Image 1 (cartoon, rainbow, N blue to C red):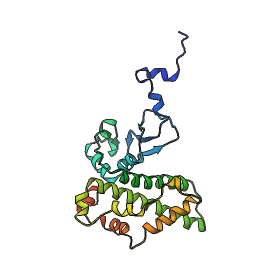
Image 2: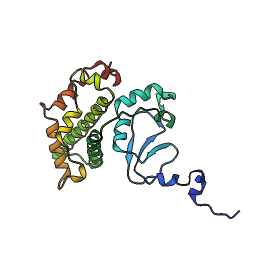
Image 3: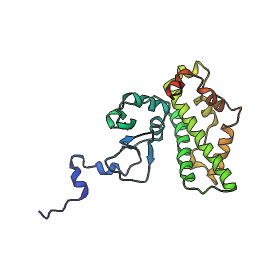
Image 4: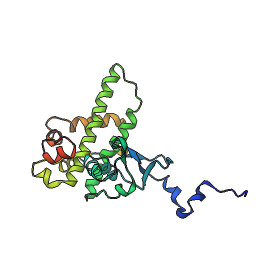
Length: 226
């Protein structure tokens, strides 16, 4: 006795395993009642009730948080008492990842980065007076960007089903040539509000297609609206 082991010595079978915690990663709870795959770039160390995917990308995060992925998981994941999901790695590994061109992945990741930035900015903001109105609008912006990402992922999985009904998203988003969040100079929130205003315009094809997306039977089925 008297031998002192470092904490990571218990993982000799995977000597570099502890370093994976310090990489950008996607986190998700083993036992879940709703879809909540989150991004961590803060080198968090989690316990055995939280799984993580190391060396991840925003593109993969968009896939995991999409309605079509939740539809897939709902049909293969084991259910526990109360309807909770046992999101074990054997199920997550079965998720088919759609092919996408580099520019398509980049466009999705740009929006995901907007969402992550907005989520951080809106966290714990006191809402009162004029600030309440502004915060409500920013939350609408966050929700709208999430809807666009979900529609983009849906299009990647089901291009024929959407295009046969004249529902296009990626081509319209690529034409916007949205700037990466890190390249935006000055007030990033104000810049995002301007982008939102442009994409949320009632005559913009992205907004029109999102508004009518639930008119497709396959989309209603995937989103549990049928």
